Length: 459
Image (cartoon, rainbow, N blue to C red; front, side, top):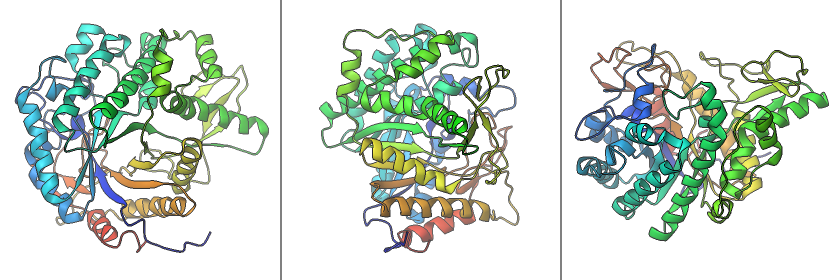
């Protein structure tokens, strides 16, 4: 296809992303209490997030760097345990912090995009109710979202409800003592149903309280390709794609359970959700205004026989994930697949006809400073190739309204701490939390600065 106009749409939102528990630090400062995400960072081999990138104390400096980069948008999350530390009572200092962040963004001409839930359930609610297993947590989330809309609704016009419910379902993140256990596996359909209801209530509440705002979910979409043209491999890819993508999108966007997938989980001994009167009506009537998508990689699947030993990323008799020999991989073993982002955009837009935004896209690497410089040309190549595919999707009719790379700052990566760096800005920090916290713009920062200045026309 010939690209007629190399520039992106005039009002395209060029942005960058962080999340509260991965970047803010100040875990127990100014009234904030612990979240389940804070505890998960204390697992062996990871970095304590008590300091992390210390955005809490460096937000002015960081937003100034965003401004100098030319960012049009900044995606961040509102920390539930900073605003409602015990899940019930408001922490004025937490509210004040986010107003100060919004002050800086407004003065810099940067639009805020706020995620309401990015894995940081207040530990108090987890201890009190058992976390997302309980419907009481849905009500607690409604109280939190209402407070956020009351406080920030005149200043934030784009909200994201729950970050990656699909990834939470597949891999955990609900609570330190649940993740990976048999109890988690048994109850994950129940927890996912509660996530969907919490999302739906947030959508309705936003529409009631801030009619001129937009709100939608965030999915961690992973395209799936068949290993060969063998129909069994094609069906295997379809099965895996439905399990890790379509099942969640249909529930959150259309209020529909894919019965075939539910039946599979029931056979596996997973408890079915307690669907009560009014649940499905709420899900169907809560219409999102747009969809945010996080994209990092694709998967490849092949058919496996029923006697294949069960393993991660394998369902005997259906599919197993295998290596795609035609793709390169990152240092962390993730396939580098720029065309996959265009595949994703077309697929989601064709099915739901809603505006889309890339909320996360990026490449992790081991990095170190040499002569006060980080020459991350590999990241520039990665982002360039993905953005070229985004532009082509727009030319093909997809309504893509913005792109936020992951991440603006080096931050605490789940499971790997500061060894795994995604940022455009280097943070002098390590897994012992003994760094100086000095900020150094990487070469990718200057590349993105120039790209924004040209509105993508130099790709």
